[in-house]
Image 1 (cartoon, helix red, strand yellow):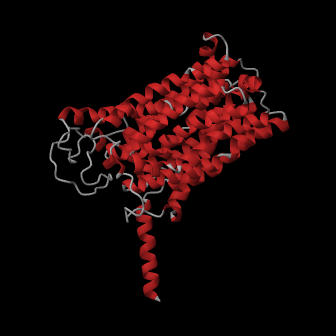
Image 2 (cartoon, helix red, strand yellow):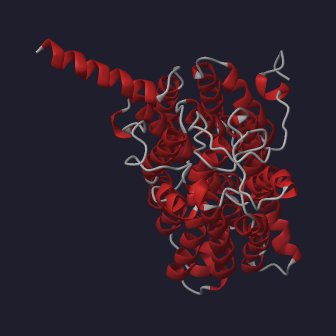
Image 3 (cartoon, one colour):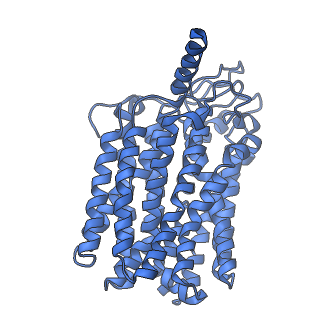
Length: 465
């Protein structure tokens, strides 16, 4: 696709053997006695059968794809019907802005807890619980009756999304350690597909179900319920990512002396800020972009399709960008290209929102592909499983905290200015620091190497005294 074949592409996957000797802790973070990913020689339990080991990795792939499909419909389906929800619940513009800020708040709060849950219950079991929380929240929120109830049910769904967001890179790193780019691309592509489907289908599905916004929103609970099935199957099967042994792939700092101190890493902070700024742009787009087009005179159905175009741009690019990123020593050039597309899209959205709507939607969609790039850099900027778990939790939780004010501020600016000039100026202004910190986060190296250099520097300083 992008030149010569990589190691990922020529790797042959084979089922693990039935050897029972333990394997030393390796780069992927698989510990002694852990039933490993396809192609690994990790030990299998005596009672585990060959068919179980054979379908295990395939079931993980199915689970990853179905989980990814459910990580954004709770948000983009609401964006397509935001005006109807506001009217139905009597929301002001500021409260609607608060509603669009709930996703990053929940992602920050609950995402930080994901590694702890994974150590206790196993990553797969936590993702299974996350899918159940999404299904329950989406089923309840349209019928909550009040704004507070709607927000609470939305928060429940977002809690499930938050823990799954953080643990997906950990699961990919453990099960597919030498295919991080390809599997991150597949996961990101499925996530973008779910995002765009919710944006495109929510309005026509609402019309088909009788015209009630409640019916249009509750329909997405069915997809979330379906996503629980493979994770439930893995929870019952031996030798999968939900076992106690698999929880060791997310060790705590006390268990793993090599785990870096993330808060002292410049790379981790650059990645967290980059993640936060791209999340700000993404949630502003998901929450408000359809409304921007509608206020410019675009029909509601077309505005939903334009939002879907923005989201669907991530389907092919989310698969290409991670693979390209893993081939580059420095990911800065990709960051710059995505940022320039965002600047061009916002400029067009300000100058001619209706006249060039399709072009602006596509350009902003390309810019929003900074998300799969950020996920890929999480896997590339840490060498060990412990490092990936800590970096993923830190970058996503801190990043989502950074992104919280953005959608809320857009709602306030829109309500008080009576137009979209100031909100679009804000979006444009935030793209500049996103490019800068993205280039810094894209520099080669890992947080473990950075920690080792800090330790060496401290040792030399003490010796000099």
